[in-house]
Image (cartoon, rainbow, N blue to C red; front, side, top):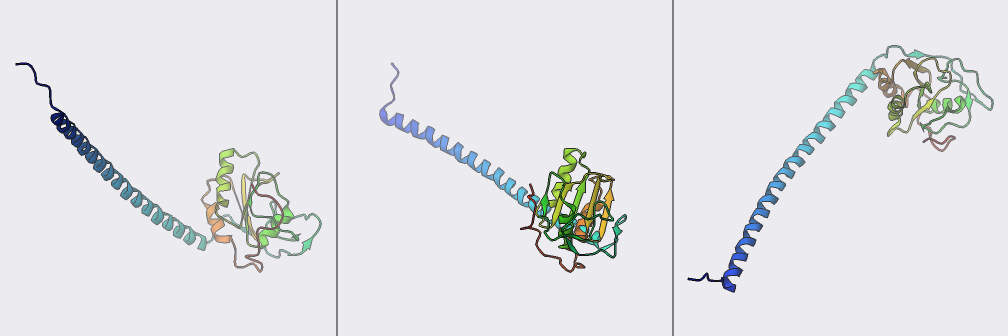
Length: 213
């Protein structure tokens, strides 16, 4: 007997069956992708929670370290607070306080050296000044500049003639180190940033002079 051609109804039924099977596979694939996505979301939530908890622990540890004395920090007493219009011959290099210009330096990151007299005024407002040898490699400079991230009272700038790779200064305090990875740097910043000992702490570190990057 000759082969019988399928009727239109049979063709429609077969097509419907194929489409149903395709939809079934698509639903299965969607469920599989959804399951994977759900697992990923849960994983991301878990990682985020871990990062938040870990960051909180790091901050707590940093605060605890900042409560103690920091090895190598020099302190300077008897610093004067006069406003002057001339350059100042500071006892420290970089300076950590003393007479200064009436205009403070805007906090932030600078790629060129900044005037001492303006930066010192910012120290009086509670800023911390991170200075470094201009010959430091770019990756080291970037590591120091990161200290200014999300901080309104940190200055980072190169300093000509500095006698150590990195020096970090606050009003009346200074730490000099040989490496940008020195663990004391973030502790110093935590301890002396917006130091409540200062009479003008919290005064502006913006709307002054200088244009940070």
